[in-house]
Image 1 (tube, rainbow, N blue to C red):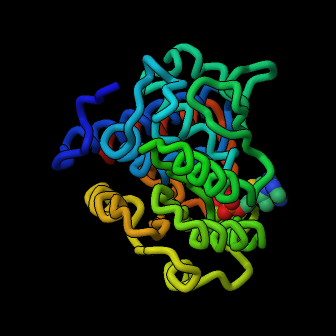
Image 2: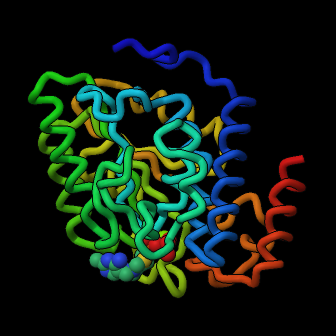
Length: 280
Ligand SMILES: Cc1ncc(C[n+]2csc(CCOP(=O)(O)OP(=O)(O)O)c2C)c(N)n1
Ligand SMILES: [Mg+2]
């Protein structure tokens, strides 16, 4: 299968910004429909997902099971709202299906399930994404596939030993087809991350990874970091993303506790207006 945009040429910043805004619009509609959700994290990783799905990754929504597709693994299953927005924007999900986000019996549960088209792993129990990503990257390489694996995980998960075991494995087994996207948003559920995880990029480098630290809400920094992560040099790559919860919607950005956002129905309307104003 050949894909028109690969290998990726120069990124089209205007197009990628428009995609990121579309993702944020979709997420705001989903959260408004449900009345609550993990919208702050979703808004924060919209830029990363826009760059992955519309620039960096080789994938085709007309062939979701294409064996050589690049994989995106969302380790933080509770960020599902962002993944669903990206999958709808990329043509894997019907736009109409988004309205069922988080409802009982929905195919789009608040924490990801791998039966949803385009969703590669089950989410919910944190600390397992990177281990699965290492296994997938090894398997693809052993099978001679050119596919790469992109794995998002969080600062909260850096407090779990399983993440560091996976980091050691990825380096040991020379998974240079693996890119970790570490979402350092500074929070974990009810407050700030409590265990001293910094300096994250230096620690990943000490574990044998090629690691960089970027502003995760800067599309041009993300495209540059991802271009740098294409090197087949025997090392797995880590992009440590500093993201701002609620990015793009000032009232959510200003919230002291943004892990789970629940506001009144009419407030959702004004938050959607804020998003449009910020991007006008
Ligand atoms: C193994 C495991 N322990 C605890 C939880 C409960 N939990 C859900 S979200 C969350 C916060 C984790 O921090 P982070 O992943 O950084 O999420 P953020 O607050 O930034 O959304 C926790 C502890 C879980 N889902 N899985
Ligand atoms: Mg966090």
